[in-house]
Image (cartoon, rainbow, N blue to C red; front, side):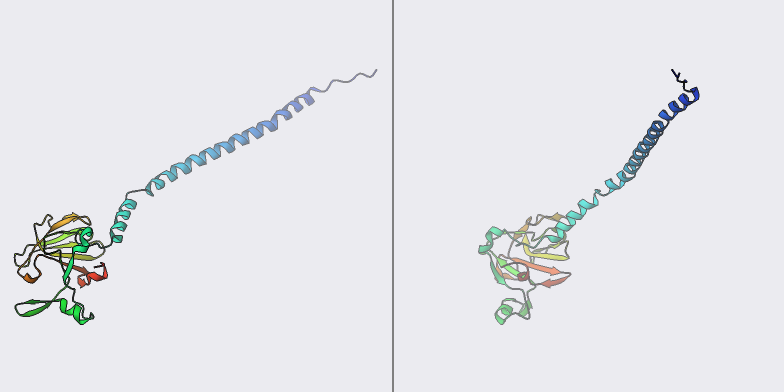
Length: 218
């Protein structure tokens, strides 16, 4: 019989080396790839964290408050539940209104006609509480025994509301008031004695008197 010759040692060694070579290469590449992915993830997480926090800072909250303030609409300068008891004694003077409305907007003082810049409101001739028609800041409190105390409120949308013929004022200059908050109590005055106890209510837009009927359903 023919005897098989033993394989040369060099061939055995070569085969063994070839068997381990490629798995080692694949393992090294895989580990390198995993390390790169982990490092990139850690780096991007650190870089993005501060900017993510910055997106939810306080200014967003402040912006919401301001938005709400400018979207607020005017309400009655008295308890809305009593609107059916309110009578308009004098109208806002509008040169384009009909004659009857214009006549109702004229005040007589010392035999002189004076045009009304707002509405004179009465509630059965009895005192009632004047309230803020809109949230704002007390710009001025004018104490006048002849006309009654006057309160001016400044609002975020550029409007100013004026409340006259008052007594028992419970706010002061610089106070921040909320819509519906009580400001004072109505009274009578010598400037317009025929109106008796009433509230003189005016609305100004950027310093110019405007008709309250344009904002409120009297």
